[in-house]
Length: 174
Image 1 (spheres, rainbow, N blue to C red):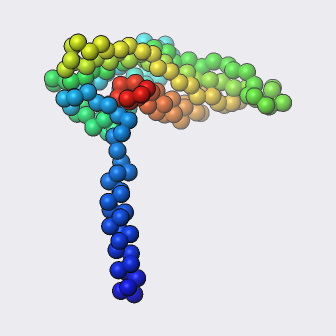
Image 2: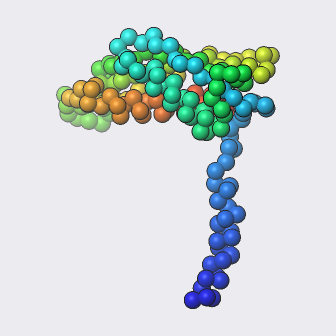
């Protein structure tokens, strides 16, 4: 039994040495000296959007920047600023899904959300910021109501939009 424990010791040391390398910020490029970010409350310009969607969008982007870029979210003396505007929230009817012969039963509705982001590096006024619209959608059967899928749909859409915003702001090769 003691020999078995001793033979596991090198494996445990190897795992301990490798585990810190599993979490890395490779691929993320945070400008030098940037430690604080300001993400003000999004503006809501989308007709028909749930009344708190712009707040939820703001908080989810703040969380992503805080957790993944490890920046302090603050209004006081920020290094970068990411302003957002909820531009569109719409449901549209889509055609049949590809490869489905029963087209009458395969009609889909599509929830689309569009947000405009303006990014500025306040530490380096010479650096040109950017403005870009980000959008994503969620398809659901036309036999279901938006209310029945709305929470799941919004969560999936926001996750992807935030990933794209984050990559545009911080990924080296986006």
